[in-house]
Image 1: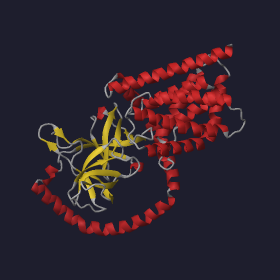
Image 2: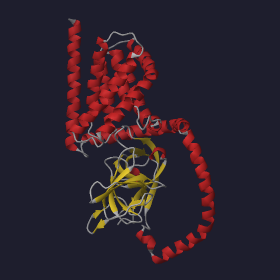
Image 3: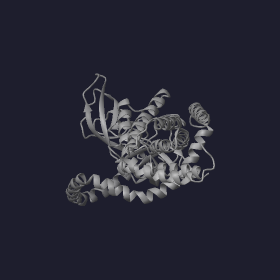
Image 4: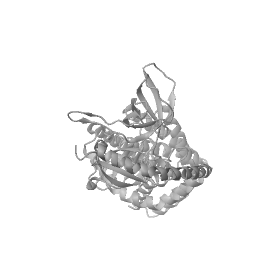
Length: 285
Length: 168
């Protein structure tokens, strides 16, 4: 009798918990981005991000150590390649520096800098955690609304485009990476000048679609962001001419209307450490 | 009271580890699903009711850190904890491999179920192939972690049971 009672109370408990879950799903689904549940989400972010930061400080070297162990052969090869590159680049730097100085002077003269965003304001941020799920490609950084960060701001790293801010807490925020399947970036091919839409594919290369079939794309070509502005108030999320990556493959044409291109991101998302958040691309325009 | 503290501590630790160190130590691109692992181990050790509660609490905690509709993981893990607790009652096997097998099977089923619910809500942005691959890899990863996690949790659960105040 007692056993049956216990089984019944367990079932009741499970039914209750399942109902609460279903109600939560429904309420959150209907309210979307600005309901009390979304606010509780950012509160959770506020609580956990300092802890993540602390744990990350401790575990980062350990994680690094093990991932280095696993990747030792490729690292050795990379080391050799890098040494060769350094030698070649040192040579190049010596000859280029003088040219660069002249170029900078000329650019300033032509007012070219203005078009690249002379007053671009950025803030540096430290990556403190990665996404919690296998189905979301995001990182958490240690700057938030108190540093002037708002949603949709672009995030870049030394190598190129990283993504944009999707959630903001007081002192931390979440960045959706461009490899997230929810992410779409308007891109422009550097040489052939073709435009296209880059969407994330998770762990694999980005997919660039809507490239016109008449554009001849070559592997290795660089892809940069295509900033656009429609007079009025519509403006692209990302400022123009930020490196996204290089073309890795041009897929055989499935239809005659568009090329399908895969693009390897310039940024190595597994080793991101410091990023720059673009606060305003050209002085509050 | 001690069990609530234990459960919260364990869930928080799992979430922290999953977003920090396991983000770097991935297995062919997949992270382990530590909260799934905890739910299944709790269900094996403490029965269906505790399994359901652990799953619900852990799932909710994980959901609030995600940018997806909240509650999907809680739903998945409540059912998973209950199912695993029930399954454990019907299997009489002293084999030490049993928790590993239950964790592997449970994680796989749980991740696929989560994917199906996300799909029904229009929130699954990956292909089915990726879903199955991740379900398989995280099940494998969780199975590998089970021999490390299981003894620790068993000791912790037994410690908190000695002064039982309320029975879940």
